[in-house]
Length: 132
Image (cartoon, rainbow, N blue to C red; front, side, top):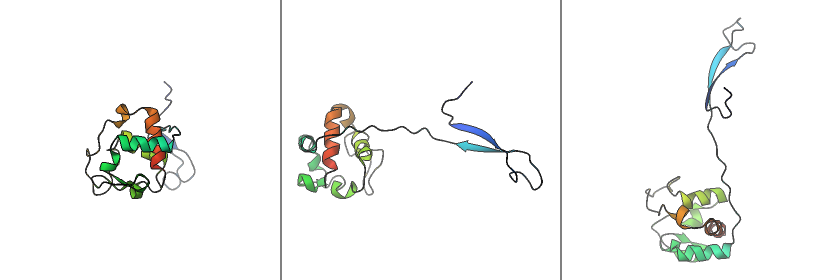
């Protein structure tokens, strides 16, 4: 059977000096890999994203300078999102417990944005959150 994506494979390394001194016997080595998925992020409209930010009440929990919001229930997004790419921001919206900001507890942010917002609304919100 041919494995397309091996998760755990045993490989024999055959090279001079791999075994004990003076032997050419292969020495097995366990290699563990992870299946990585790629997140596709659609380009959004920051102005429409501000409307989503406002409509969803994000500013009541988050400080974000471009929105003029000063909430303090969740992380200050002006600081927490510095240097973060669109994929990270999108994941933080649709799966907020994937990475919890230091000093905050899981399950504070609603877990439903991935299903209650359309893909366009999420893309727009991500675009807005990338404005600094």
